[in-house]
Amino acid sequence: MFICQHWRGNLVILEIHAYICILLIFTCLLFAFMKKEHPVIPLSQAVETIKTAILQCQARAAKMISGSQLSLYFGVGLYVSANSREGTWGTGAIYTISEQLHRELPGLRGFSIQNIRNMRQFAEFWQPFLIRSPTASELKTENLRNSIEYDRLALEKWSPTTSEINRDEFLGISFSHHIEILHKTKNIQEVLNCIHEAVVHQWDKYTLRDVLKAGIPQPEHTAPNNFAQTMPTVKASMKAIRMFKDEYLLDYINVEEIDAEDEDVDEAVVEQHIIQNIKRFIMTLGRDFTFVGNQYHLEIYGEEMKSDLLFFNRELNALVAIELKKGKFKPAYLGQLYAYMQVLDDKVKKPHENPCIGIVLCRSANQAYVEYAVRDYNKPMGVSTYKTLSDMPTSMREILPDVKEMMKLLDEE
Image 1 (cartoon, rainbow, N blue to C red):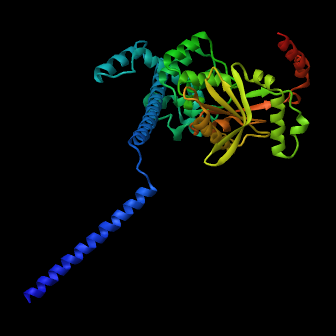
Image 2: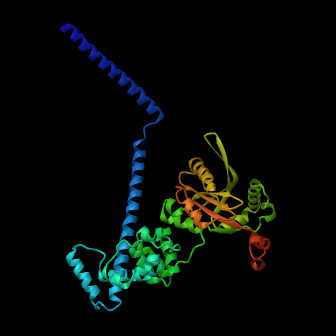
Image 3: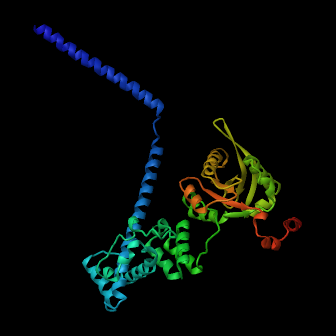
């Protein structure tokens, strides 16, 4: 009996061992299969991926902190304005408030006498534009005198009628930036333009101050793009932003030919007219452009493609791929151009050159929609439009110099 039980116990143990061996073999096979299908990620790539996530999170956190600070300062500014402008506080009230806050909250920053005055100026300027919701009538002076809403700039409280104000741009600069702008501008249009320029060019407070000293920046007629987010340096992005215009005049294109129904024929005709007038086209683009070729052959993994026009710009030290389109901008054009740019960067770009820049040149485009569509691409891309001579008013066409005569004079020089 004991022997039988002993053998039964051994059999159970053997069965367990067999199951374990089978499980181990299955696990090894599964691991080998997974390893074959999913190669191990290099540590350098893992570090880069984690670093990118950290930087994105930090940028998002910084933006949230900036937005919270602006919202608090706006609420405090409304409160101080409501109590100080009506004479309910004495002339030294702001001084007393600042001093007592610093006594009761040691280490507090941002609530100096001048900064509290700045908060009041900030709130008084923006109140007519940001508080225009249906419940605005409830926002009486008496309410502002008694309490502070520190989250008034929160998304759910943002006035739906302020469509002309870009909320992301408004919250995308610091309070110091806002005050620098308010001290130098005269109206809402100048303020909005300065905010936009500060965000696009990523100016710090001191650069913004220098720019404002030189004069209020006017809206630049630049192509909608993602250069500020994708170029290697701020200096390079500013060069590219200034380099490419939002619209070009191609007065040598035969309008009757490009108005044909066949889209492929249209784009080929536009390209041929440009090639036949390549010198004039380069002059239209601006300085330091060198023509590399048209229908430039590219190949990767057996797939062939052709870039419509390829240039090199000495100032930017980068290839510039231009994709021609006959009609209105479509987001798919960006995807097509992006594929060309990938191959150009991998197979054509020299080691000392900057990444390729891509431009979609089409007949018309909604600028706001283009900026929305291009923002998530990680290569520098922009969209410009072109007009032919027939698109211009007759009065303007009459005062333009004769292009052939102008080119003849340039050739003689």
